[in-house]
Image (tube, one colour):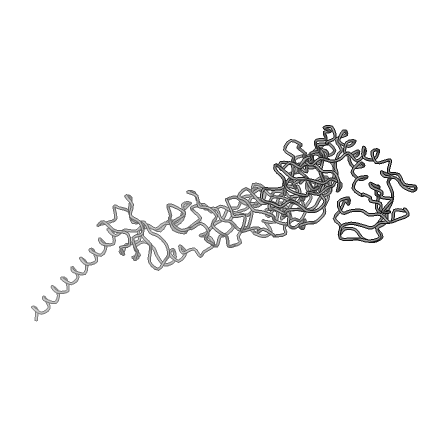
Length: 545
């Protein structure tokens, strides 16, 4: 740093140059009369005009104009030539030096100045336009390769040291930022409301510029009580907003803010608005394997568990019932305000279908249902959501079957007849075969013992063969003892009816190939005997002639 002359001592040294009106060192108020190439002509109240050289000005010469008033100090008087030389810089220098020293002792020495040039290790700075100081590069906030700012900026004096007639002043820009940061974290606390400007809008939150050194972050979860709201739906870039401090950490210099903390909490009134047992309306927000969520109002969601969707049994697809965005009615069945949980029921809001089953589905009626599940003992048929009945294996077909899947298929629509209803136990007994015409009536009318039927081998068992009787849509049983040869599935044969039974086990037909063949053999024998008898008689007649 260049040496500075001690202007205060010079004032005393030049005091002998007093004139009749003014003296050297005197401070006067001057008005700019003219701006020259190398200085200013001023009227300072003396007998003659004064001269302020460019070197004694605080600012650049182009910053001055006619009529501008300046605080000046007389530094030279030449009575013989009638000239007075004045300085704007010197009185300002003394004033600023005193102010710097006083404020430095209080750790408040923040001044404006400008960088005049880059030097080894940093920059030369002119504080207040008159006092030279050194700005270390590490304190400049100027990145390598960047040019230094040309205008007036703030600096903080971090070292003030007098060495004889010299003064060593070191300034810093970084220290100002550190001081502002320190003051912010000392003054602010959790719960304070601050104002800032939206700097960045991210998917996970909003960056807020609180001041030139501090930024805060609003997480997406703190934007609104409605978690579906996105940051872009709430704010715009450069928008000024207010937010509440949730967390503040001086060490990491992190400030977490909240917008929703400034809003009324919708959960404060949920007990009044959504009492248990009430039916409310909401929008389906999301669907999951365990149930679906319904938004009742911004910030208040309730869960409809899977068990509260369907009245009936069996696993079903929720998306066949509701879709995201659907408006639905639900009943509040549980409310936990402390943990912010509401449990809802979709099926209860719709009503229990079993309350009207006897009226809607009288015993004896034939209805259409869907095979929901096949069991070894029968099948469950769903009549409507929440209403299903059981078809015993004996009621599946008029014919004998070993397994229900021989006739039924899950998901298939079928006609069933309602045989009985037990509303208390939510049970319904159904029949598939009773919903169709009984083919055994025709069998009883048209077939009896000795009738010959045509059939196709349906199943081969150890005990016998199951035949599908052609033209009658019934099955007949051919015992092994009545088979004369080994039969194959699909083979068509003829058999004779031995018995047609009707008992608690249902209708049955017993047939025999063996007896049919025996009867046919006997008939053939009779025909042969008759033929022989006729032939003998004819021979005797011919011989008698």
